[in-house]
Image (cartoon, rainbow, N blue to C red; front, side, top):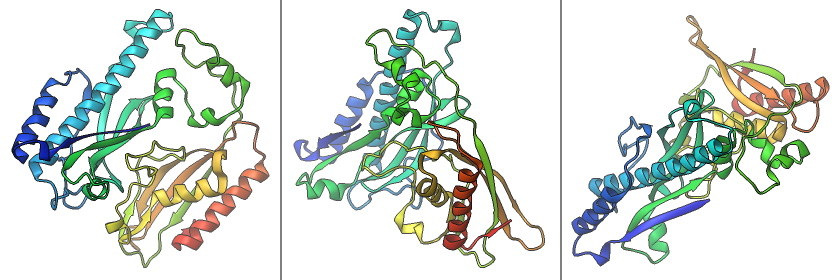
Length: 326
C-alpha cells in the first residue's frame, strides 16, 4: 500500500510561510509514547542526500519530521486497535503486552531522497515494515506539480499482518495450506495465528574468501532475509537499498547474494543470515560465512534437492564475484 502528502508552495506568500504551515500541521499531530530509535541526521551528503537543488535544509527537516510522526502515529493506531481486539477475544492481556519499539534506518529508493525504512522490534529482531522519504522533486515536476513538496511511503501489508497475527513466516501468505487458510476465512473477532507442524529445515553453510584483488567496500551484516520486503514509496523492492551513484564502488554487497538465492531456490529458502566474518591476520583476506535455511512450506525437501540448489548457489557466487569457496 502506498500513499503521499504534498503542500503547494505557490499557495503561500513565501517558502517560509509554507514551512510554517507544515510545522503547524506537525504540531497538531497526535503525540505518542512509542519507543523510537532515530540516531541518524535527517540527511547526509553521501548516505542520504538532500535535494539541495530544490529544497532547503529547513524544508527537508520539517517535511521529514511530519512524515515520521505521521507514520509512527499510524503504527500506534494499528497496534492499539489490534491489542484491544485481542484482549477482548481473551487471547491477550494488558500484562502480556510488550512496549512497541520502532527505529528509523537510512535507505535508498529511486523516487525519494532523503529516504528511510521503519523497522519494528518483533520476536527478538528488527522487522522492516515500510519505506518512505521526501518525494523526488523531478518526479513532481514531470507531473506538472512544479511547486509542490511532500513525502511518500510504501508499506508492506504482509509485514504488518505478521506483527498483528503473530505469523512467523511471510511465505505463508502465498501458501495454499488449508491449516493456514482456515484460520482466517471466518469473519469474526481478531485472533492470533495458531502454529502447526512444519516440514523440517535443511540448513547449509557457504563460507568463502573474498578475492585478493578486492577493490571497494564490502557490505555485510545487514538485516538479511530472502522474504519479500515492502515496496518503497517509489515502487522498488527495498531488499536492495543501494544508491546507484556508489553501487560501482561496492566489491561485495550481501543483497547480491540474496538475489542469487532467490533466483535459484525461490520460496524453498526460509532465511539467509551471516554467521561468521573474519580477516586473516597474515594475508589480510576477508572470509564470510552465510547460513542458508532451506525449507519448503508444502513438503519435505530431499537431501538431493537441497544439495543441488546449494551447489548452484555456490557456483553462481564463484562466477559472479570471483570468491573462493572454503
